[in-house]
Length: 332
Image 1 (tube, helix red, strand yellow):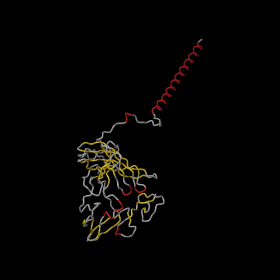
Image 2 (image 1 turned 30 degrees about the horizontal axis):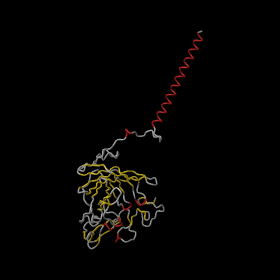
Image 3 (image 1 turned 90 degrees about the vertical axis):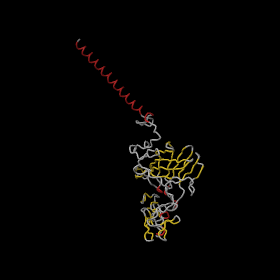
Image 4 (image 1 turned 135 degrees about the vertical axis):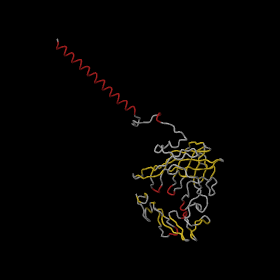
């Protein structure tokens, strides 16, 4: 009799243990199901939810770049919270990396009897590859007039290897195109965008202010490295220090005559020789090549005329890159 009771007790314990194990397996199965439910259709277990997406106030122009949101620059009287530009590491087409700076511009422009200011933040997305042309994405753009700041849409184009850059800002049912009114040696722009072309939303020109007379003049300045803003000084005002169409600085002791820098009786004008360092002393103009430029025709009277960062003359005159790519002064 006692033996039967012992057997019954052992059997009851076995049933209880089986039920506990079954419940534990079911709990583990539910836990696994919960984890898979948390992922989105692409398998991302950290997918954003609507609660994670927060609208950025239009006046807070540092909030678009978390890398320097805690490093505000100059708030100025324009209403902008200007960020401190950064140097980014970007990946090149061959898998190498390179450092390239942000291009953050503040431009003063006339329109409708008022003075407007536009602030555009952009960062590099690709390194300097063929034809030395980096690409940029705009992080944010804002228009300020009469102390009121409004968010706007914008694009920034580096402008090819000649760096004829331009901004396009969509605002008030218009497209503001900030471009160039004058070009120097080799069709290179003279300064930051210096004039305004007004377009409708179909990019039909409403008013072209980029003729040589600049009927709609623009002054663009780059944000300083510490986030402060320089003064808005028109780089195309003709004077001895900003000489000629391109208003490049004349060498020391040179004079400005009919928009040309003269050293005694010799032309000594940086805008005609962009790859050349010029100096003027005792009526003689001396020229030496800047880094990345070469005197490939052995005639210094026209300066260092060849850009040695191009695949046809990469690093040295006549060095042709078989790949068609010149990175700096070395073939890829």
